[in-house]
Length: 168
Length: 203
Image (cartoon, rainbow over all chains, first blue to last red; front, side, top):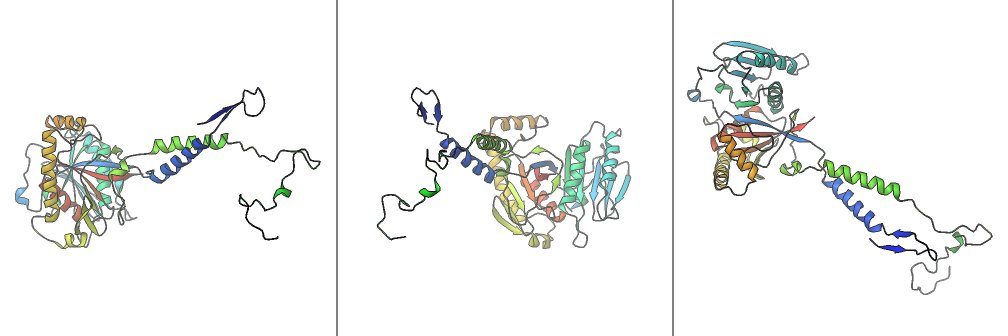
């Protein structure tokens, strides 16, 4: 950046700074950053695929542990405990949305129970058909709430591979 | 205006001089130079640059914006990390930018294996290469390799530092049918990708 000393009057001590290159640089930088800025915050949900398929002969039942299973269907969410055989249906609201508040309350209750107080695993599946499809957003919402409640190890499975499952 | 030959400077002959009051004239005596106060302008630019540098994120570079792809919303705030990306738009499935299949064809397929064969082949070779790289300790950050050691001891990784061995990102449209997601997850698991990161948008 250029500087000139005492250019105006004889004996002047004023310093003139040439700030044009600075303004040029700032303008270019601003334009570049505005163009390349990412305005959408992208995050992640980490899951462990169970890898179970409709071939139920491969499904291994764990007799030792009670497993909390969640099945998202087009008209309701089904929450069940294996071994204990405790099941709950959470039907959709009149607005057509899943009742996520009730789902959160339900899995929160399970998290505080003796079975899951010190455990963080939960399995989720979605039963989708051409006639009654389940959207990816609903799976994400269910997993997001599960993580929020404290089930950090979410496993995604095929409906037939759930440890506890309704009759499909 | 009479026409005459051009002078050494553009508009030299255009008589703008009547617009400028001459210094010391009876008309006014003010200087014709206008001093612009650039300080607020520079202040604003500096603050804008600082703000933009703060919001600048490299996360967006990990994912590709595609037509027909709207990520689902979630509250999770874990940062995304580098990994092979499977993209599912409303019409097609791509892996690392290469078309694998159309969503319609995959949904029509009722094979009992519940796998997407074309995707399995790509993922399988990618998984083997990643495993080899991690085993040799090359191409990856030291901290990520440490995360692999911790994973063997069942220690939970820090957010954004998951072991790259068996790690892939699924970037799917929010309206994707769950059947498609199931098939992709099963295929990824079969190929050796035990950890899937679902890319989401924060509200």
